[in-house]
Image (cartoon, rainbow, N blue to C red):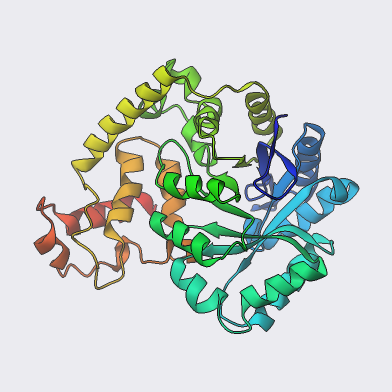
Length: 377
């Protein structure tokens, strides 16, 4: 396993992090549930293979991820770095601490190494996190007490807002978690800015929950070597080409996926210049194809019904251009959650305002219906 200094924290972390959001499941009496024994076995095997960064959250895996993670790490709690998150539901510092206490209890620990303001936007940061006697005030006090070792945030807002949150944080943040993979490079500027400010950078979705390793011809063509390079190995190689990223956080649901990812990290080399150029050309061609359906100019916005039309069409292009439909559907299902705080295409009332403003004169109303029919199924 490769290890790197994690920003200015003074610690070394494994380049592969274990994301406990897709733990093994089992079928029993016609129902699917998360398999605690296999989840524990999987995380302990990850530790044996050198992983020392484990990430969970209160609602992952039907709200049992923290419990399973807590049990799994007990034999080596002092030797690993535990990350979890606090959903900023309001500006109350009391409520913030109550949610923390719930996580500590479920994790069976008395401290969190990296505690995240979960999926915050710039607006949430300003109005809730930084409210008088709010979450920011409390987390600083908790850090002094040793309950929180490092203050972090996870991010799903507009890319430019990441820089603003870091600036407004006034040196408080020591790490961040954001989306980044070879199909979504929108956070590159923020990642670079964070690194230059001594902030440890963890990226989620490096292989799109495994979907970027699926046998899609469009994905296969992104990296030289065809199908052999379109696996998780190719996706991780792309992530580690970025010198400002410390940890690739992967949600691993079985031993095969874990061992493949560990092997990749152990032996990975960044993409060569030729491979990067090939990837850039392939991505630009796919962006050209995607532009036939929507260029992302955002002239159609804002939608009176609260639909993020360009973002929804981006998800549709994962299906239509890249043929990774499961990945598109998974992301579409997250619409309405704090990190995708808008409505899905079903909210369209066919008012037609968007089409009046679209410079391409796209049949947006029809495309929204088509999108919902495909991605909501």
